[in-house]
Length: 147
Image (tube, rainbow, N blue to C red; front, side, top):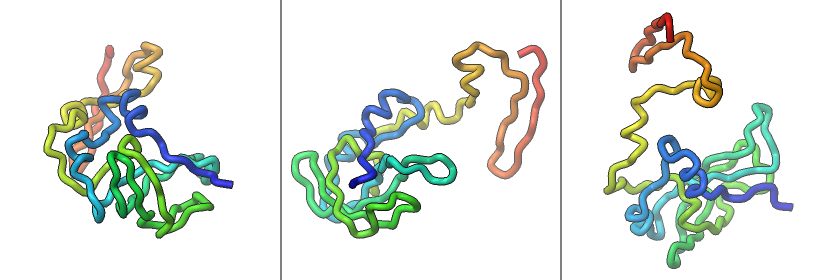
């Protein structure tokens, strides 16, 4: 019995358009045999951390009008019934990354420099008590009163 299926990346991106990246159609249209793509393999089996998906690279072996075939390029960490070299059939809407540089701006880049907050702040309207900013080489903690 198959324990995995491929996640629809377009659906996930529509749920989180500012944080979930998918390549633009112009990049996907350039894919051909020999290119690599990354797909999300959702799994019915959770690992010891509670994860139920793995993101893995697939080498494209066939392209046919937005439908693809390829071979898995690595062994999964915990999905039991697929291994490196196994054939995977997928559609353009499953692709979350390619080995081709995008020729269109990525909307996520515009928003990635913004701050992250917990769901308690975002959805429940709770106030922020502590803020910190991470620098590339060190972290500086700032406490802000009254927010």
